[in-house]
Image (tube, rainbow, N blue to C red):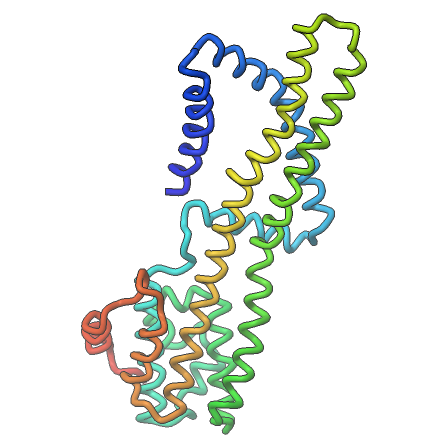
Length: 296
């Protein structure tokens, strides 16, 4: 869907230009030729400086994280409905084991999650290293005797806030780059005007083309910023938000269970927290947990 949007940006930009010119194809092709001739140099100035500024402003880890978030163009959501079904089933198994055998029965699973029969029954969750660590850390705190839901909620909120700041960095950094690109377009245009002024003795038709080429920088800067880079930043921010929802879902389930809810009710609390596009229905979840093997 994102690539369809990119294609539509091109279609409506140049299609609108053609309509504005009264479908004068000869004139349109001539103007397009001016744009294409100036494009390589203008693009190099604008996008090259923007990328260089991005590198200056970010650490190598943040750059790698931002590059990994480019998958937002293909997969807007970090987790699917199937991922959440897996997560909710895992939470149900953990809560059921804790309710029937006590938190001490979870100790072997907490200390060695890679070999845990409970976690390995849910491969989508078990493959998410950070989520496994997040869950095990809080289960360990609970098993050590700290079962006050209000204290745990405050601690979870702090950790999730830290995670959110980390995961939202790609979107913020790319948006900062998008905000600066129009100004870089003006820089490219000014350089083009300087080049034109150096040839002020040329005939008017030559100067006209040179001025037109110089203005391509302004057009390109605004077009790239609002048509491409800004929306990409928005897609990254959305993906980061969906990634944090996964951890919040774990938090809601744990807190509901600590406040006395039965395993199935605690999992229902977590299910209701999810957005509708990834939220399994009540019946889907009930059928799924009823088919799960007894945790041990």
